Length: 113
View 1 (cartoon, rainbow, N blue to C red):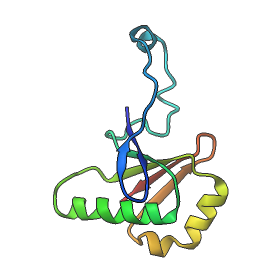
View 2 (cartoon, helix red, strand yellow):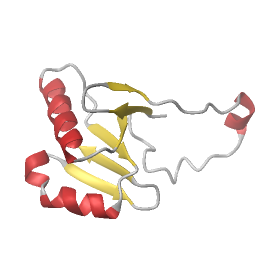
View 3 (cartoon, rainbow, N blue to C red):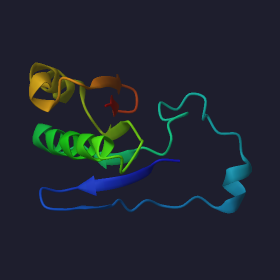
């Protein structure tokens, strides 16, 4: 399962989420339908704006180049269609080396570096 973070302009801290009980884990889950299924525990952030995405893409790209991580994905939660459209207009500012996949039903934006 992905570890999610809430990001502000000055810090990144773990997002608080409610835990499911141990008995809930035995129930059938729609993991096959999840957009995050198959990803190797990518960093997951609440979306606050394009500057945040630019900063995190640059930071994560630097970590990849330095060999500090081998995870090529970032996930942003609660991204609307309008925000995605604005992001597409400024895609070159975010990074020319990225691929974006948006899931409108969940609002998840997956970025591959």
